[in-house]
Image (cartoon, rainbow, N blue to C red):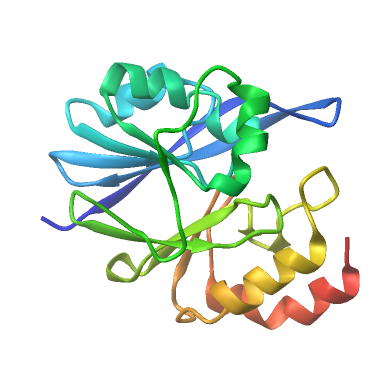
Length: 209
C-alpha cells in the first residue's frame, strides 16, 4: 500500500532566549492503514494520538529541537511505544525542554526511516538549528523541511544556535538540488515546491539576516 501524508495543525507556544510567542505547528503523519511515522510532535500528544488512531506508530522524527516541535514527543512516545529520533547536534536544545528525558535514537545524514510504505531519507540541513534535518521521500515527491525552508524563504536565524550563512548553504546544497516539482511540506504555514522557491535564493542572500 502506498504511503499517504496527513497534516494536523496544533497550537501552543515557542520559547527561546527569554521570549515566548504563540505559534501554530504542522504535524505530519506519514504511513498507510497499519503503521505510521510522526514528523514533529508539537504541543498536543492527545490530538496527535487521535489522528494516528489504531495504526502502529513506529517513529517520532524531530526536524529540530525547538520546544514547539518536540514538546509533545515524550508523552506521545510513552503512550505509543514509538522511537523518538533527533540529530545529536540538537541535544543541547532538546535538554532545554526535556532535561530528564533523552531521545531514543540519533538521526544521521543519509539514514532512511521506513514505515507504512514511506522511505524518509534524512538530509542534515543546519542553520535554523545545528541539528536541523529535512526528510526526503522521492516516491512521494515530497520533502519535509521543518523550519529550514518555507514558502517565501529560509527559516529564522536571529536567535541562539542559528546561523544565516549556514542555512543558505543547506538550502542551496541539499534542497534546491531536488527535482523542482518536489513538494515542500513545512513546519509552519502553507506548502510550496522546490521549483517555486529556487529562483529566489539570491534575493534571500541579499536580504540577509
